[in-house]
Image 1 (cartoon, rainbow, N blue to C red):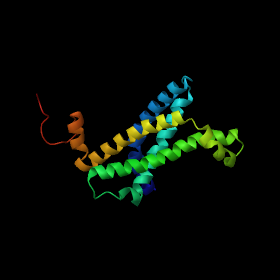
Image 2: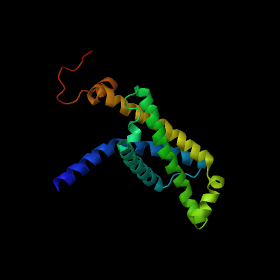
Image 3: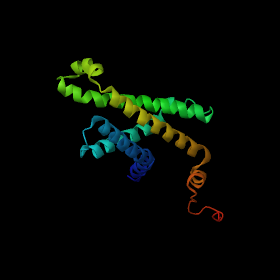
Image 4: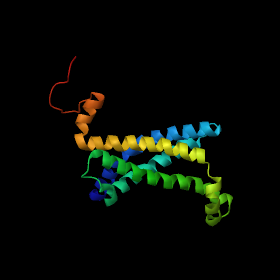
Length: 175
């Protein structure tokens, strides 16, 4: 039982950073889409952002476990970041396509007719805007994650935020 709890705890803490980051990103994307649609805001927006963030958070964990994502691990960091961003964006395109397809399935009474109408009825401006927003933040996330993996968490926090972790040797810098 303790092994299961230890596994669940590990999975939770690995999924937490991308989930929180993409919760913010999905709120930004929903805000931009609502502005484009001129529909205003609904109570479903935070729910949709949370669901999207949970899906992306778990997708990042699953994707990172794939050997395909480790293809450029021995190459310069820019190759690894570009490759991972490309693969993550492929996953995002699948989810964005599903997001557009699901309402069409009920509208056209089935999957086959909905697939036939998908390209005609997709809101391309919303799709592209969401893709650009998610792509930009996915690239930022992938870069920062690779940078932290390369230089370490403590040096990153100190360089970027000026924070020192608890128990860090040395006195804090004074001006």
